Structure formats: structure tokens, C-alpha cells
Amino acid sequence: MKNLRVYSISQKLKKAEVHKLVKSLSSDLDFSVSNLEINFISEKSILDINKTYLKHHYTTDIITFNYSDVEKKIDGEIFISMDDALSNSKKFKVSFSEELTRLVIHGILHLLGYDDRTITDKKIMKRLENKLLSRNIFSLL
Image (cartoon, rainbow, N blue to C red):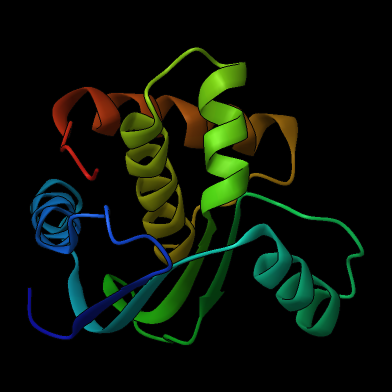
């Protein structure tokens, strides 16, 4: 997919599959990509980003930065903690690849304006996330 860059600390991540996933999501959700970086990073790196930019002193599975002011046109960055994703996959009894796919979907939804700060918003976002996940199973690893 044009204007998409994928970086990873893992040699096992299939970048072409991430591109296919984003292309499929762009069709499902009717958006275009102006500029998007998806970074698969370590727990330490995401903790540093969380502290520096969000003033949160804890790790998290995903951080998204949205730079777009145009609806349905993505311009942003997604940072996914490979370590937290692996922990979540074990916790929720899903494959590591499925968890990474879920996180990419989650990040894209944030870039499209979905939020998960309230219980109601979280339910709306989770429902859509699950629907998209069921249609977009890619083997990212």
C-alpha cells in the first residue's frame, strides 16, 4: 500500500501482510492513507514514548498519534508493543498474530476518530474491532 511504512524489531513480522491488512481495512472502512507509519517496538520503547509524549508512567500495548484534520484520510503513527501484544495473546488465549492484527485494527480505528475513553465508546469500538477482526485474519507472523 502506498504511503504506508512498517518498522519492526522482529524479523518474523511479515510486512507485506501488514500492508494487505491496511489495504483491506481501507476498503472496509472507506479511508485513504496520506501517510502512515506502523511501528512494532519493544515494551521499553513504548514505555519511553508513553512517558515522553503522554506523561504516563506505565507500559501499554498501543499508542496512536493522529496528525490528520481530514475525515477518512489517515495521517499518523501507530506504535505497538510486541511484548505487551505477546502477553495479551496469552492472557486472552489467542494467537500472537491475531493479537497483532487486532492492535493494527485498533490503531486504525483511533486514527479514524474512534475513542475508547468511556464505557459506551469502548463498547462501540470493541464491537467494530471484533467485526473487522473476523473479516481480516492475516498471518502477520
